[in-house]
Length: 383
Image (cartoon, rainbow, N blue to C red; front, side, top):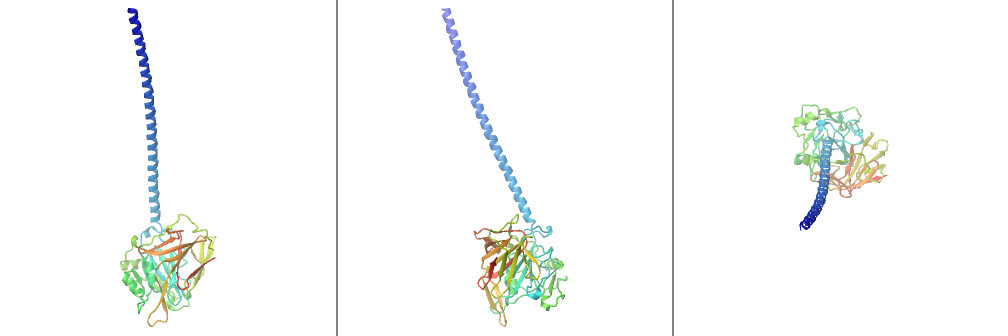
């Protein structure tokens, strides 16, 4: 009996040991599985943290790049995309009326090697002649003299308003009959302007250069160094109103505007006005013209088609050309290429888009804009 009990106890002990071993193995196995799961969860957590860190680093880098781009844009000339005088950042541009008849050429300051106009707008005025308006983003950095300064016309006044400009001119057209003159447009729109015929400031702002053998109306000039003082005398706002300013977009590097070559562009303003030829030079990657009796260069050539009307004042022997700002098609030439564009005025700003409706990005540099008649023979020839 004792022997039998002993055997039973031994068997029980063996079974207990066996079950205990099985439980231990099971426990070890389960613990191993648990550790694997913890390790997998740790790896998942580490991967998630790594991705989150990468995403945060990318976000910070993107924000920094955006801030850098905004700072870079802030410090650039809004009319050219080029670097500008720090003191001029955020300031209003000036728009100056300059004559373009043959006796006025070459205009003083147009091709100044350092301070040439940022944008030159050319359009018809009356009698088939064209006139130019020069836009400068920095009114403290102009050519020593600018001219011949001439009188205001309504389309130019309105165009200057698209850039929140201070408008400088020598006289203006007055209203009569059905013709609404520049004097009324300036008054109605409250345009900050400096008119030689009314200027009574304390600085020598206007004068005459009589070195050329031309009639006196072709000799009026602006002494640019005194312009800031004159603006101060008038008490005009000098900080830009961004809600009234046309901001252009610019490429970070020079890029062709299409795959269509444009080695030469011939622009006819209207069937009663003049033709201008721009020729591309691969040497400096700029367009050149000698039609102003100088070697004027521009990075961008823009042509804007618009509807025109001609109005004769009572007693006048000629008709004024009026642009209707209806928007239309156009052309953009840069880097020896040409692209079709569209343009219009939206919320008081000039909008230039490609044929897909996207805002055009310009190459950084100076621009000539030819504003031509879509209904009176204005044309463009690309060679």
